Image (cartoon, rainbow, N blue to C red; front, side):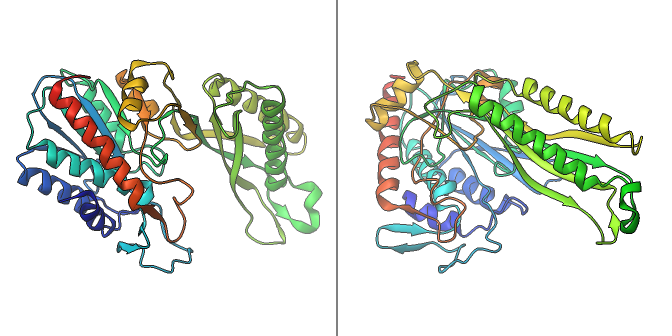
Length: 385
């Protein structure tokens, strides 16, 4: 099967992060098994989802790992004009949820593995498919734990997120956090005698905006990013029951996306200090006032040196001369930090199409990805890595 035939099948699996990906994983495992390749399936604790890891080539030898996530974002509330979970081939574009992010690369990687199974590789090819990347690189962590205990770790990892086949050497790290602001409820007619948790929340958001201003005006810079500084973003605020009740709780979800030169722990320390000062002022009205900050997700950034051997190797496969850094996160920082595996991001399509209705990857981008992996297979046969 070629990559586009496989992509047609992959899109048909509605692997939204909230749902199971087992049908897709079993499909890929079946393709590999038919080609004589064994897969290691690593299930989630509840058994509802799974990672897949497979190796083609000599055992006990480190190889090149192709990594991709199998989950996609929801289609809820989006105005699709084409069926999201059925591939539409039209005018050189392949439409469907996940076509760009990132089943296009997964399809190309699986096709390369099937071809590799017919070849005598001197250097192995590894395939790593993970779940729940879209909600914070969650599922891949158990796969990484497995690889940490393996006799050999991959020499190099290529993560196929959509970069239009440009070689990306970095992305920002991320911290996701909840801030629970606690006040004192009361009747709205007597509001000054209560402590409005929404007001606490607004003061806290103002502090986050001041921190963002500080980072933008005085923080470190990395000009390879579209936004060259660390960002602080508020995504949700939930509070209130009825208009005539002063709310006693307000929850705010916020994130930090940091460049490599900034330590997110230091940024969080400053934010916690601001929260403490807000609470100290509010406690004059209500001693029970509080702002509790809880981190619910974090992953490190990726910052592979542009002049490294790993980057030069992947550039030799794509024919590209330069490198970029991408705004979105990947599991690359985890592979680099926890396995010591040099990692780059390079895959077909553009994130400009990702997460949108009528998502697509072009046939031209798929061809370029297939060509890159064909060159990789030739290198693995020669053992020239």
